[in-house]
Length: 437
Image (tube, rainbow, N blue to C red; front, top):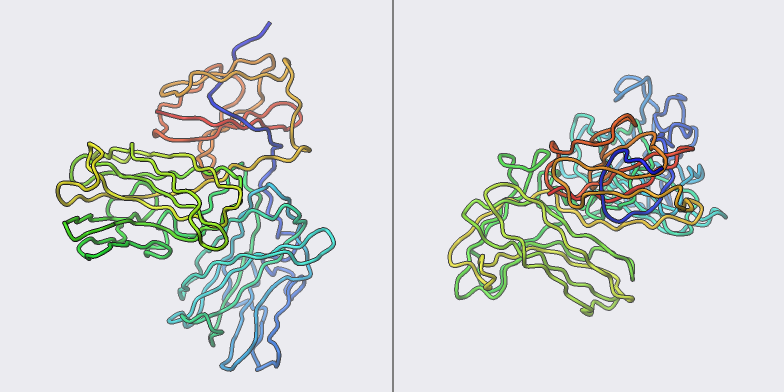
């Protein structure tokens, strides 16, 4: 007889549970061999005297770290990387690369942190990078990525550049380089694009006001949804304003994929609509479609809103943004309005490969109810799950419940979108979407 055991809701895909293991621990990511094993430093075409030392006197953790010293001069390229080490990665899995970095002279320089990919024949495929300012104290930097469909391994690299992205002179300390496969089937494209404003700057965001310049956009630390920073936007519309939007541009997308655009926001000036808009472009920068959602009425408390975007078959890039509308849906607010915006995400749901799919039969069936939920969630199934874990939409583990419950209390979760992992036999985890209202 079927029995009711545990929890939650909505559509699902099936994935294999992966322990969060640091892949770089087997590739000298902390330099704890005391040498350059798995790493190289290069400066081409002609060495100028720059180099890398393994040091013991100024480390983030452990006994050793790497100190890069770059001298002035013209070069085609120079970096610390692990090009020929080939740490393994899998397609359709989300990864996060982390490293602790600092500089003796951070003014005017940035670190370029790169992750690149090889196929099974060790042929180079592609790479992606972030640019970040440095400090004189060790600070953790990270980049999330989704390997190409034919990727089998990766490499990481660190470069020191100036504001014009030319190779800069100075020092760069590198320690505790780590690589994790994340327990999520969602890839947040804005993780490395300051979607949560946690860089403390407006990087990657732009307030565009056509024919006037009365509105303001700044970063605030006084009223956030989570973390340290959020965006404070003052919308000042008048007769000369033709358009006004806070947006990110040229986000690479995959044709035919489905994305969820979500954010948290609150009003500082009474109810109004925060319109969420988007524009898909092809490779020639021609507009393909511009889906938008104008149903989010802000209140004086943070709420989350999201809507689903479907990339056209020849889409190459995407712009996303926010506009202010009257609460009745008319184009411009009657007067100035203000709001806080935080934790903006653009999630691509990852479809697992056939080797990860569990054949679902009556024996494996899990029915989730209610949907949406506020206080409790339940799962009806033939077999009792071994463990249930609730994750945030970006993969952070929030709650773990053992198999002795037949109801799960979710009243402590804020309204929004979550994912619930149901661990069954042989370590297999079924992942489903949970909406809390």
